[in-house]
Image 1 (cartoon, rainbow, N blue to C red):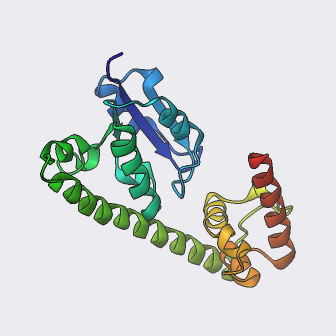
Image 2: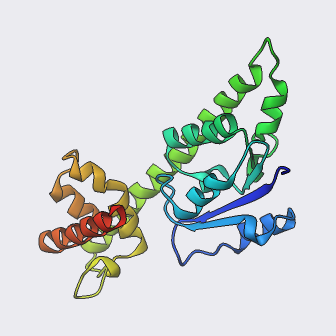
Length: 220
């Protein structure tokens, strides 16, 4: 069986538009069945369509993504996942936004029996760009949390009178997902977490409990 070409598309939420990324993949001639689309946060790689793509890629296959942050936004996991795909599996990745720098085929071509210069250069570029992606995510989450706090100070309502997980705004949901584990490990206080979410104490614990039950359901 010959090598195949795949496209990976990701947006953070269900209401964001995938058309721009999808169009790029179609213009590359990638068949619809070979384009994998996730509507999920980039905080980790526990995404259904990404996992599905990983299960079918083989040595010699090629994956296109629009930008590095579409692959993910966690610094360490981006590096680990890139190396797993390109070195353990033997597939290749091309980042369209930085195609001159990030085409794993070019780095592989620079390697010889006596030198792994290409792999060394790839590691350096990957570290730099994934770090930048991670920093952008941290700044975004900080701005979101600060915006929620300021909105509450201004007397604005950030949800319906009867709060539950489904009534959280997109910003609140991302802050919840990004900081839940730190709160669970007691690295973040409940008071601070509730403030970041713009929730009162009772509403905060109600939301967190519902979120915990949802997480348990996903892992059942």
